[in-house]
Image 1 (tube, rainbow over the protein chains, first blue to last red):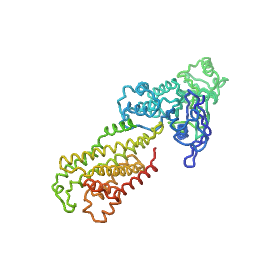
Image 2 (tube, rainbow over the protein chains, first blue to last red; image 1 turned 60 degrees about the horizontal axis):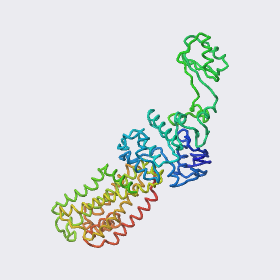
Image 3 (cartoon, chains in turn cyan, brown; image 1 turned 45 degrees about the horizontal axis):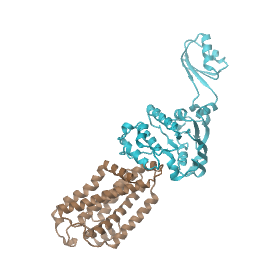
Image 4 (cartoon, one colour; image 1 turned 135 degrees about the vertical axis):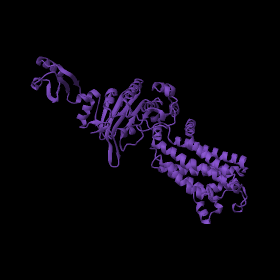
Length: 303
Length: 244
């Protein structure tokens, strides 16, 4: 069942279309990623989905066309850059937000669930960034929503807090909540999302599973090693699997396809050379994004 | 709604600086200034009353009200907008208008408590009479406080940043309080200053409090100016207020 249907959405600010003909659908129970660099129009897109902004043209249909308060009952939203009063305690925030919904989950159980049980009497302003994010997720879930939109959830978190947050999201999905995850972290999208909409300059570049996106680009691998002795590049270049050999100091970088690693190690053994620091690199979502948009995302910004 | 008011009230009490300032400063001034012999003597310029009969307590009442309305209220609301508290609420089925309403209720309660303390302790310590027309006094208090809240909401709507909101409020406070007679009773002002004051938002509030304190009916012009202030600032604030 389609939970969200976005069709040819456009939104203009000051003569510039920040969202320029975006279409995608989200299926029930999936984690759907909206991935792109800063300024690509991700947040504006999901704000239109959440009913917080009105699109200039195009249609958004959530849960079969709910709008207004009825929609907000069923849709949990965690927005970028929205805080709580500094002096509000964790349990008070959840208790208050629970009172906004006709049906809500037990706030105390939710506090337990997001791992803030020992922080229930702590003020919002005294929580760490990761704890604030987890409270924010809890607030998005307290109304027992069918769909949750989570925007730039792990930006600014340390790696451990990020992994904890990812686990939490996987648990939430396991409960049957459909999740729309807005992110510029490739690793996050690759790890969590069932499908991803790649967005660049207000347009959808591709919608596919992470593996599907990766398989769209030339299936290429890179093998790096340090030869134990002198090695003639032609030994490697003669192999059918190899497409290129580069040297970087005493390191050799070989690109190619097929069973590249086996071909190289066999050839090196025949030449009497031992490969040290041997590494194989697979294509990642980063490479796919670069291939599909011509841009690389560094700290959220497209380069 | 009750939970929202209660939550906002708790937040208020956790930041007692503003409350102490709004309640204790006028109260302290009333108790200390009321000991000055001149304030306790019948003065012909004041129409045969003592300054502590109604001028001083009425001035302290408007000081408490404007402190809440022009600095505390706009500061809180502008901060709620800036940090995204209002935006966050707009994703729930409940409108952030309720948060605004809860804020108004709490600010009103604080102003009312401050006024009750001024009346009660003024009576106990200095023998200040109770307001002689309590109903009219209460009505004037509500109307005047509402008009100041309107002005406060307008400041919250126009302030570019959260930090600037209370600053703008304080800058407005001083000329308004001056014209209301905070430092020089209006009886002692030149006619022109008094006439200008009649059309500024705060002086009519102070005047009407004094009139009803002394048992007179409030002047129509004063009531009209207060009501007009409320209508204009309220409408402008509603139009200009941004949720994010």
